[in-house]
Each structure stands twice: as C-alpha cells, then as structure tokens.
Length: 385
Image (cartoon, rainbow, N blue to C red; front, side):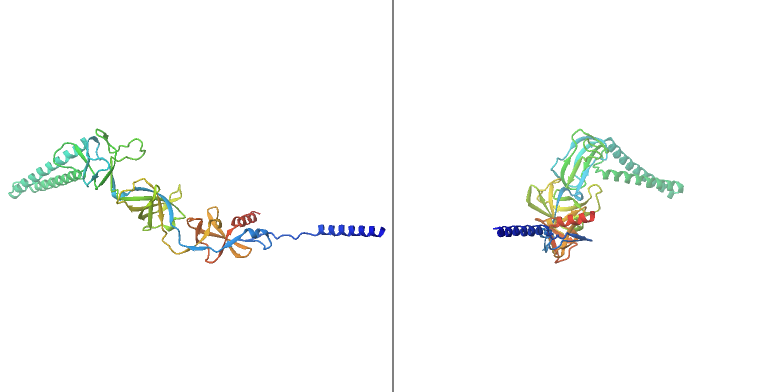
C-alpha cells in the first residue's frame, strides 16, 4: 500500500516537472518585414505574406478620354454687330431666328453723326468737281499764255487734295453701308456675313452709343445683334495636364448630349492651348463639329470621347494595384516571392475598374493587386523611422 502511494507521488512529480519544462520552452520568433531602398521584403514564414497577391497585367488598347465640354458658336462663322454711331433706333428689320444674307440691314438708326459723315462725303464730292473744273480753266489759260506756271501747279495740287478727300469720305460711307445720295442721317446697321440672327439686344426707340455697356454684362459690351452659322459649332474643353499629351490638332472626337447619349456627332480637335490656366491647372482645348440638322445648341453641356492617337496595346492593372502618393502614382512589382519593388508609373483614364499603365512597367512583370496598401504602410513606417 505504501509502495503504491510512493509510485503515484513519483508519477505526479515527474508530470509536474515535464509540464514546467513544456511551459518554459521558448516560442520560435517570427521574422519581421524589412525595407531595402525601394524594395519591401516579407519573409516566407510571415503571415503578412499571405495578404499579398500578384498577377500579370492584361493587355488592352488605350481607353478613350472621356471629358465634359460646352458647345459654343463657331467664332469663324459668327459676328457680333455694334453701332459705330450714336443714335436712336427707328426701325428693326429682322427678328431672332431669321436667316439673313451678307449686307442685309438689321436695323436703322437716326444718327446726327452719320448725317455729318454723309454731308462730308457730299461736300468733298462737290469740292472735287469744282477743283476739276478750275484745273481745266487754268490749264487752258496756261496753254494760251494767260496764266503763270505756278497757277497751274496750284490748281493741280488743289485737284489732287480734293480727289483724296472725296475718296476718303466715300470709302468711310461705303464701310458703313451707305445707300443712295440723300443726306437723311438714317444709318443702316448691316451684317457683314450671311447666317441666322441668334441674338438681339435692342428695341424700337432705344438710344445706342458705340461705348454703351448694358446692365448685367459687366466689362463686356453686349452686341446689338449676333449673327452666326448654326450648322457649325465649337466644343470647348478643359483638360487636365495628365491627359494633355494625348491631344493634338486633328485628333478625332465624338460629342454626346447628356440628355440623349445615343445622339453622337463626330468632330475633331482644332486647337490645343500652349499654356495651362494658372488657377484651374487645366489646358484649354477647342474642337469643331458639324451641326447640319441643328439639333445641337450653343451653351449645351456635352460629353466628349477622344480616341488617343497611339492605338498600340498597353498593360492594364486593377484599380486596387495603383495608389497615389502626393501627385504621383505607384505600384509594387513582384521581383520574387516575398520581394516587392516600389515603382512610379503613369496611368491613363479608368475603364471598368482597370487602369492603363502608360509608362514605368515592363512587359511580363507581375504587379501586386492585393495588399499594395499593406506594402506601402511597411515602406512608409520604415522611411519614417
């Protein structure tokens, strides 16, 4: 009995000793990630490596740039008509929406300034006729020895001055669209081009002046009439500096109205500005497009798709693979299992959750598509310390 008790006590002692040894056995340490330059290394026995996944990019053609734009009148086919004379509107000849030919009268103004211009032209024409008759008489007298040479020279000079003044006054009236020979002070306000009257900012009896600025239009002189060809439009774009390298004069574009995206009109880029707007940091781009059916209207907001000139396939990666640091984009490239290199890349516009990589990535390299933020945190923590 005593022997069995001693055996049990010995077994308990040995079990307690073994348990103490088991508790005292040290746990194997897990290796920590490290950073070497632009490389982040995660040991293969680290559980963090399981949160990182890489895959090869897919090849795809560059996506079209999708921008927002505004339609405007084609300034090469648009004229804003002002009055060169002060006066009062006596008659309006056209209404908005009416088509007019070049030289058509838009309105008539009673203007004393224009009346003086008419009087000057008539007076200069009368002076020219008198100078010509005088020159004929003096030349006849000179040929018969009844007049001195200096008298002939003076008559010729007077006739030349009168001709110059008459031509100047007649050209001034012609530029203003004068008609007839009467002096009535009725100035015909004409359009220099053919088109459609799209804007009118005057009424019967209104007083107008060349320097008149209408209320509500600060620092801009509102035109009395605007005439344009509505079958030609411009589309105005503000493009970010990242998209600017893909645009140049002649690049095709497609315009779609927001209210009806199925309606597409093809055009092309006409002008790309040489400088960025210092406030918005955007580039002003202008395109031209036809509007033969006149369904589009100036000041419409539209969506513009521009196909890039370079149609060669480029690698595309998921959006999760790219992260932004400051104003630059980066990805992590897998060099070998557990070793990842930080790379700066240039990207294009997103398309269905994928981003084209325009530069900074060699073909065939595997890119981290899962866990890129974890690698960036390890990199930032290392550089901060």
